Image (cartoon, rainbow, N blue to C red; front, side, top):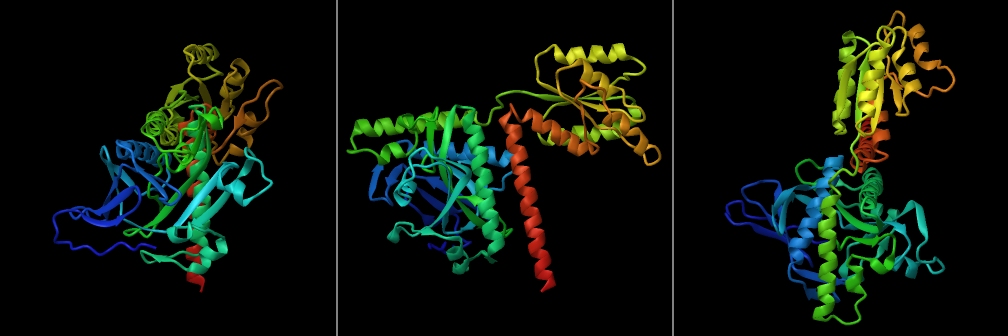
Length: 429
């Protein structure tokens, strides 16, 4: 494993920490804890057995990586990425890299078929197939088992890589793949497989997604058709490297770098409309709005009573049905909840009851949200944050950016529990 060299803090120019086949890493002397990741125009295959210069590749790869990391960060995934610095470089947190490539596969192809004779190309993995490879060019990056990784006892930036850390990387790889898979599906592209790497942030000792994710990192099949592949496999498959062939490879890379920008754009807009029976329920409703905002879902608050002004309630309902924006209604009414049932009986949009229950009559009042006449289908969620989450799950069916936030939140909750358990075990010993 290459270990970053020490640098002299007195130097004014960037100090090179490391250099790989397709990038260089520089220490930013005036920004402690940060590095500059500079892409190169080189393209390689087979551990650099084949390598060529491809003019413009550095800019294409940097644009792709920056967009992918922005998508993941906005979703809630912890990464080393800080910001794009130039056309060919980005700034990242300084990490000590864990020398493992994590490979996640949805479709069987490539080296997997050679290592697993009898499996036909196109076999679909559900759940995803996970593999790991030790980064060792001299031995062609051998496949490792989890036991080998644990027995290696890597210690990076003061963090020993044990079972907890391996589990976090494994779980994170699956979540990252699923987020990118969902995003690429909006462009009618199948994410076939992907390789990623993790590092330990030297400042925080956290494991974060690091290195790069560009067109060297995955297989992409538009419309699920291998013959249309747009990734580096096209370069690997070349029988002869000619200027014309390299131009075709470059066009594929440019196609991906342009499409990847679209992954940051919502494909459908949704909203949540909260109807409250009285302004006395405002604090409860503000919690719903705050939670919706965390998913970047517009949330509108309205006051109306289905008991005292049913005509106005139905007029408000029609207002939001009439503009074509997918809408989830949340009914907030204490005592006798008329809002939820009236809305549910008069709209095809989903309705969620979120009654602000009180300690004195709450046990009785909740039944007006639970016991519905036949033909009504409003659900009931007592927690305002959970009601917003449920609304987000509905919106996320058509908005991949909301879905990605939900998926990252699931991962972060799991990781927090894992780390809490590790800390507790350490205190008990």
